[in-house]
Image: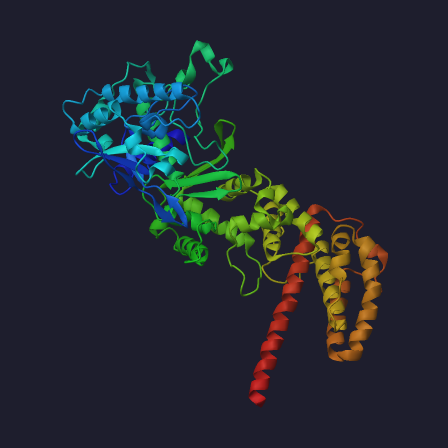
Length: 588
């Protein structure tokens, strides 16, 4: 299914002249230097194709014949390769091997049999046969070539295309000057065709080998069922193998706007036909925001909301277009599929809206209304570092969001655990906990403070926030350690151990505040009275009303109740400041 979807995507994009997708037999490769030859095969100049991007030099990508799979043996590419193969540059102290590489490179070009009909090929063959490194070493760029062993190719003086891009070369590649390969039914196309023994490498997967890795690969006897060698026990035609690998490499490319990193999974996405969701999907998850457009995430999510609200009248909610999301993770020399999901654009859009509805919780005006996935996961990681996010959690969260399934229980547990460790409930973790409790447990938690919520965890969380606020207002100076610093973890897990102590302390704080701000003390007394009434307990705080322990879901409710109550205080404080400012302005 995955390979078939990629195969179809290749053919869809190949019809678009602006897609820059390589035709069969070719690929796009960064070529730092081009050797420009005269018709007599002498070197005219060395062209430096590199340019500055993000303060780093980057080479221009050129369409060249598809590279061979590099192994420990000698394997030359056609009309392009590194300086070892092209110029005989010995970078590893192995002159004999370099000579073999030079010979293999030249013989592959001669095998085209185009020297009599293509001036470019004739010039390249003469250049290689009469190669004089002493002349090339006089070029100002030689020092860098010698240092980096870059990819090189050829262009004939006065021409705009590379030698490897000439029509005769393209025709030779299309005709396939290869020995007859075994034929079988291709698993992707269903047609009888020549089977690809070694599939082209997939590059761009974060953490995988830089030379590339494979999704399909057989290299041990245990994988060779019925004596079939290499990939013949999972037959894929040469044309189909080229198509799916080219499409995937295109999606994983440096300039691709259809890829993002989800934890350790390099994630790509595409649609069965052109759709706006392809352009906005990464931004929805906060993976494509930039300094130039910091609000792109918010705008992208809003556009999905608007499309869903139109009940499918928007093109973004096409019920026929299928959308694909593929997460790939490194696994030694292979690539493992971390997650794979496909659904219609309409279904995907509705799941996205459902996710952000689940996350919605009261926040400060300066905080993001739609939390990016990376920021949610970072909030539950040790020290807030991305590398501490559990490897498989990010992909599992993404998969469940897209499928509309309950969030992983690990997500809820991790958020609560970080609250305990930091003795604080952040906006991000409060949103995670609310989303998990509502979707997984059907708790029905509101966006803002719900004074009618009678859940024991929620009420205890509110009570703790009120006691914390009472202490803060009773002391003019900032305390080195407040109630939350000392008691949050125990209060949210073993209430019976923490609350009796806190209730005794609250009387002292209340008396002190009453002497300073009598009206405010009365307000706190009312809030506490209402909560104690809901807990069926007298204000003296008897031990019997507090549970010995709280379950994971109850701890989650405690966190949300605590967060809601604190946000209520913050909002009221802001309103008081604004009101006082206006009154002062009126007086003046």
